[in-house]
Image 1 (cartoon, one colour):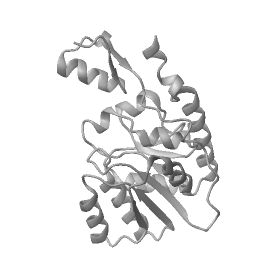
Image 2 (cartoon, helix red, strand yellow; image 1 turned 120 degrees about the vertical axis):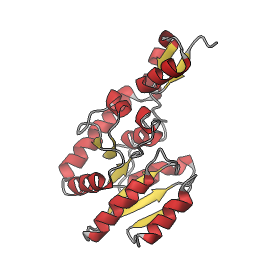
Image 3 (cartoon, helix red, strand yellow; image 1 turned 90 degrees about the vertical axis):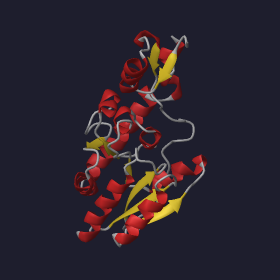
Image 4 (tube, one colour; image 1 turned 180 degrees about the vertical axis):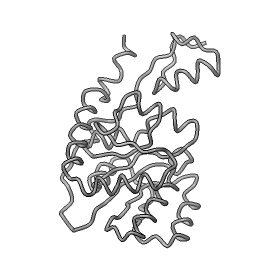
Length: 226
């Protein structure tokens, strides 16, 4: 019955058109983006010798946090000096924290839920930020808020390769992508970025530029206004 339907990716547009027989001409794609007034580059933490990987989000199947645990285990077994800071809670929080205990992970800190206004400071602590790695159908149709937020903060981001992500982003340019559900690939990509500071800086710079040009509130509403 709607005159217009707003979705976040072309994959979602295709899904709604096929599932509910919606006229695709009524569906407008507007990337989620983020609050560009809040998610801005902040000063880096003082050098303390640690290499921090940041993640924030709800603990749902879409997120694939269990694959982050798998990567953390691999890195811990290799004695890589890398620490994960995990912000958030949700549906799978207890199973994930139990998994961390079973794997005897000492390189992860679970920080619980934080207000939106505090997330830029959490992101600023990270040398690398993580997106989503789930393998559900929905995970392959979306680009999550956290990817846009970390890009807006000028951070290098690793996220799952998906049809949705490839609509707007380029692997190795604005973000790095790995196969969803593959903790080993994630671990290898983290090691690669840890040892390539120049690449991290290039990714962060390009991510920030793309965020301002394409994913700011002013940019994402252009088609909607039209």
